[in-house]
Amino acid sequence: MMSCFFVAKSICAQIEKAICRFWWGSKDRQCKIHWKTRADLFKAKFEVGLGFRDMHLFNLALLAKQVWRLHSSPNSLLSQCLKARYYPNADILHAHIGVNPSFSWRSIQQASWVIQKGTCWKIGNGHHINIWEDNWLSRQNGFKILTPRDTHHNLTKVSDLITTQPIICWNHNIIDQVFLPFEREHIKQIPLIQEPMDDQLMWPYGKDGTYTVKTGPSCISSLIFRCRL
Image (cartoon, rainbow, N blue to C red; front, side, top):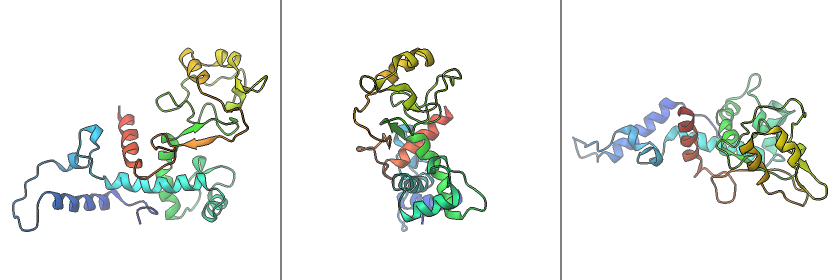
């Protein structure tokens, strides 16, 4: 159920409470010793917790898997039905909740930000990557460009920064004119493929660039932790 619908935090809290009762002692013991607080049990290890599965984060990770499937399999029956109903002129990463949405679609929308913020584009031809809005600078925290939007060169897609003469490479003249010094070097160091290839959305926290529920909760926790700083 958690892979299809957004579960209220109150229900997640009840599940976590049952987990705590199990770990804090058996049914035979009347006085159970609480060695750690409930918050410490479900806090991530990098936040100095014990790393137990947070039900709310796990729910978001499962729903984010649906977002990833809709993006990676656009020809599936489910993708085509949802696209025709909710985002006919966009893709799943730029879709809105729409008018009179179903509960399942509202649930998916609750987790779309995980894929939006946690993924990074692997550059192919650069035609599908927006310079100013999408995540494509892999060596930068957040993967986004920090340089203010340029209004003089009318640059929109990453393909506008690439030249094909004599070979496929970065247009250093444009890059030096538009971007901040530290981002110029980051962009120039990104390797470009010499064969025609579409851009690919990658999940940098997995081994093969594919989103997995196993890596989802820790990534969501780190994204939330980063926003609090």
